[in-house]
Amino acid sequence: MAKAYTPGLKVSAHSVLRVRRALPTQGEVRVALGDRVQGGTVVAQTFLEGDVTPLKVANLLACQPRDLPALMLKKVGEAIAKDEPIARSKGVFGMMKTEVKSTATGTVESISDSSGLVLIRGAQQPVQVLAHVPGRVVEVLPAEGAVIEADAALVQGIFGVGGEARGPLALACRSAEEELHEDLIKPEMKGCVVIGGARMTAKAIARAKQVGAAAVVSGGIDDADLRDFLGFDLGVAITGSEKCGLTLIVTEGFGDIAMARRTFELLAGHQGREACVNGATQIRAGVMRPEIVIPLDRAPTAAEQAGPVDGELAIGAPVRIIRDPHFGVIGKVAGLPERPAVLDSGSKARVLEVSLEKGGTVTVPRANVERIEG
View (cartoon, helix red, strand yellow):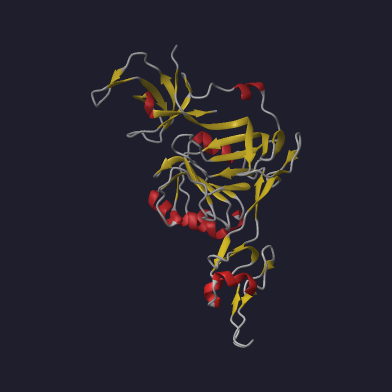
């Protein structure tokens, strides 16, 4: 059969998503099976222990550690505020007493009569997991969270930074080939997921952050602009935890690359609808793609649910070329020759013919394309 398989990105006008939302440690689940949830619904909650602040109280009082417990004004388990006295020396004939004040707010956790240290435990930190995507709870994960099912349009990107964000889709560019410049970012885009076309410029990113946009999605980005935005070079295999005040997602890659027309039209067709985005990207084992999820009001048809086999390369399948000299070019599979072909390098490889969106046909190794899944 004239078919092959390759990894690919999902660009789906309608699908059924199942999203697992779980705490990093055990806690309290706050939803039940069958519940309808919104993006901001708290699915589960727990509390993490506060930070510990050590105080060298014996040293500050110039006393022996074994004498410290008798000089404490606060006992183990008692609350204390910052700058509140925690211990006081006896002084000389009841005079010239030395007082030590707490440098943190919390609870006295321990008093050591061997080291002279007092440990102050800060307040517990609440950790909440939100639903992120509106939908229905189809599975409860005891003491962890829940699985949420949603009817939605889905676009996966190549790369992103920043965590989860939500907001209405706001179209900034008129076409997939138009660069996203700062003058296209308007004040009314505050809280929105801004949709660009080709490369997003550094000034456009700065402007989007200034007006308070929730996220920016465009075809490409220059690596120098990304570095300037973050303030450092990314040297990790996973992103999403950056505290940059704005989530960025590129759908095609680095450089001056236009967004795939199919992707642009899908996003533009939902202008004004609420979108849920996540810039988290993992590029090694356990690949994770940044996503734009657009919740829909209807269930997908049987044809939409069936869709193509994931990663299947067949005649007519949409693909993106991911190696030079045609990097980022979109097209459809026009032919799948069965025999290996001799490449320019002199080596042999299985190839396929791609009919390009902009016209013409090229022959490339099968390893040089990825399927754009519907």
